[in-house]
Length: 570
Image 1 (cartoon, rainbow, N blue to C red):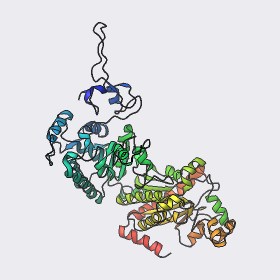
Image 2 (image 1 turned 135 degrees about the vertical axis):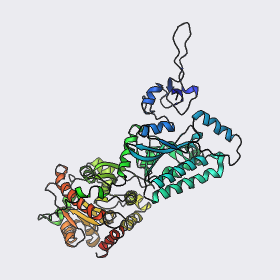
Image 3 (image 1 turned 180 degrees about the vertical axis):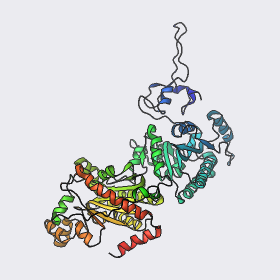
Image 4 (image 1 turned 45 degrees about the vertical axis):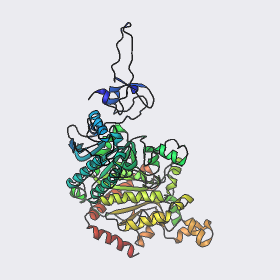
């Protein structure tokens, strides 16, 4: 392919050609050798951009990537097998000039239509790939695009393969009218059938992804990634501004905006895209369940000795559970798991940083890990809202749990919250409903769930992460109906009697173990900090191996019934 044909536009005005007179004897720069970046306007060598993943070396602006180039960037060399390459659409509306325009684009782009689909390998892992190409009518979705995607997904379902789809689109193809609109339903239905048999779909949103593609397959991924600063939205910015008569804020509808508002899992730089996709695929390989490591891991099932319970008062343990030096959820994730990939957002409103969650490996087995996160400094405390989740946080946690259920991954929750956030905006967005929904769904989750109280376990804010098969507590953690201060204030109208309240609430690990509210108490060292965290995580590691070995082999209906009976007897 000629260098001058590598980019999204080939207009001569975008290229810099140096003209000189013959008298001076200086050669002209060949046409297409240089390109002007449409962001910083700098002159850049085309080949340099090609070697830099089609990113401007001056300002890091992302150029659009042709479909086959994208495949080359992410697929193992020589592994791509294209499907339905010659599939083309008709002209259902008999729209004037439409067929001629299609033919012209076919000649110009060497594509039959706006999406390329097929099968490939990424680091040896089989996958079905679809890539939209913005050069072809801005990758608008007509019948042929919808049909190629649906066929690829159906074949992926039949062959039990994951799907990765790189979306780039101006939306529906106007020239095909209602037929174009129906492709939204067709592609969405194909992905539903793919999902129902437990297969993975990764959606990658690139610049721009708008209209009917956003409102169908673009936003239906089990995991949704995006390139930096990509325009993503249903209605385009110009349409919105004309409709509301207002100027849109800077960064509106960009990837970063969607991440903040909970609609994508992660922004991935182009140069790391293949590695991230490979890591996600490896987490979802069939056969990576407990059977593959049972003999190696499950034999180590010695019973953990009962934690020594030092003679501290309940109030002293409350104070220890709140110490700022105490390890927080993210510390346990870093220490106990490998290959952690954090996912973001509730898909409704926001990414709540009081909940940190994603997928990781525990001794080689994929797991879902979710932690209530307080932070370790004043700045972190504020960022994570002191570990008090909003409705968005609980919905993010539930989304990750349901994803784990689909792929039958164990769910490991680290509970550490003084309680759910009780601000005005939390009530506006349904804090009570979000907590209720988590408890309701967790009670019937068809995959093992373990919850570990590592600090404070406050009220329904904790229970919404602890409706589990088993609940364990660290020796100096607490778990209660509310804080001692709140208890004293409500019952005795005097929050200063918190110390007294702690003594009657039976909120310590030892109390709750004796009441059969929790299954295990995990010993912890004196002056517990991240420096000696391994003393606790080593104990947790052994117990988690045993838990996973036992519960992953359990029949799904038996698992759910056992969890029901656990709470039924309380």
